[in-house]
Amino acid sequence: MQEMALDPSLRSPNGFLSSLPDDDFELIRPYLRTVDLVQDSVLAEAGEKLPRIYFPHRGVISLVVNLARGERVQVAMIGRDSFFGSMSLLAGGDPVVLNSAAVLVPGAASVVEIDRVRAAAEQSPTFRSQMLRHALAIYVQSQQTAGCNAAHTVESRLARCLLQTHDLSGGNKLYITQESLAQMIGARRNSVSLVASTLQQADFIHYSRGHIEIIDLEGLKKTACECYGTVRSHYDKLVRPRSLP
Image 1 (cartoon, helix red, strand yellow):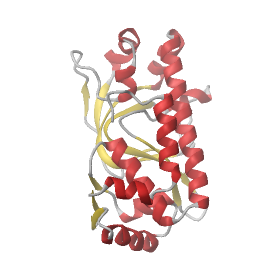
Image 2 (cartoon, helix red, strand yellow):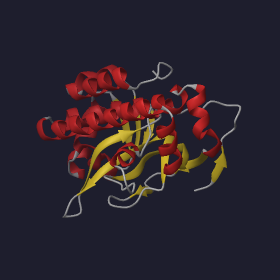
Image 3 (spheres, helix red, strand yellow):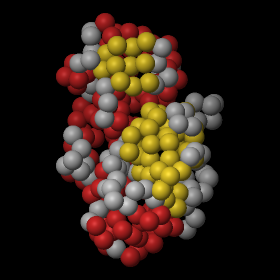
Image 4 (cartoon, helix red, strand yellow):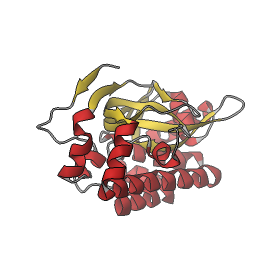
């Protein structure tokens, strides 16, 4: 990944960083670097030490659980309103990754060494409070996703995930492989293809070879289960910056 220093005259496009008071932001600003988030690249595997924190500007990071037979199931998504590494920060001791992380939607992110973030959290109660709120929001999302995958239809789960990806990436046009879609909703690839075709026939999306364009947001919202609204409500209460729709 190519790294560049953050322009000190600009506020970060990441929601967590932009929500920090100026003094708190200055605690880590000099150490921030910008990197590309390359689609399908693995940022960390479960059990590894996490050397740095990712604050997406664009794109979406997928947190996945690896199962014994090789399946990978998504448990949460992180986009421009939060950051990857919150759970590792809270674990204490060595910052071990609890869930594998890969780039679902390409984009860019600010990165900083995890020790710099820990030092900022120790120095500033407001920084620490914001960090804890974001960690809680990711935890709530993962809990809701587990219940959703166990109880709701493949169609409603796919609609939910597409809506969440839209919110986190900020765009209507997405490129997501069929394999990644299957991981997102905990289903087989042939099921994803059938359901994506159903959503396309309803004129909610246009889907072709992994290229997805969301055409009718309201239609998707009517198809999605209540989990989309529940997760968004928790984010609104806990962390969502007012500058992000």
